[in-house]
Length: 102
Image 1: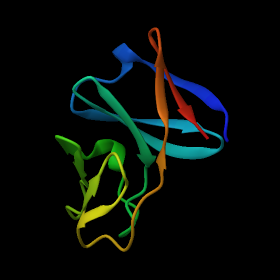
Image 2: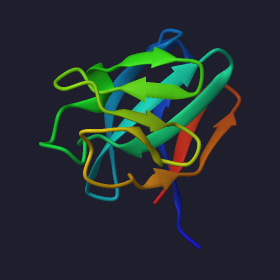
Image 3: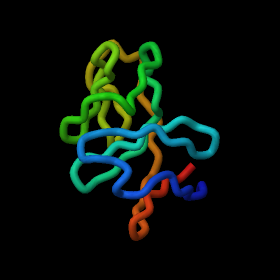
Image 4: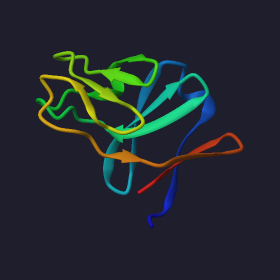
């Protein structure tokens, strides 16, 4: 079991957008989809596109470089050219703080 680290506040991430955060020495894409927050590896498994800049649709994110798609809740690849799934990190909201477990 990891440790939860504060990475942002609710107001720091607009709906259907992402933000690059760091926790435990890792670059993580913190994504807001409606009232839900997700944390996944920031680098696309294709050629490292910045997923924090991707397009969010429901519980999916599309890489801004070559349109690989991933499920935000599981990290699973939905459509290529991704070369593999992504790591997901548990997220919790404590008051106004967003914390990621690493």
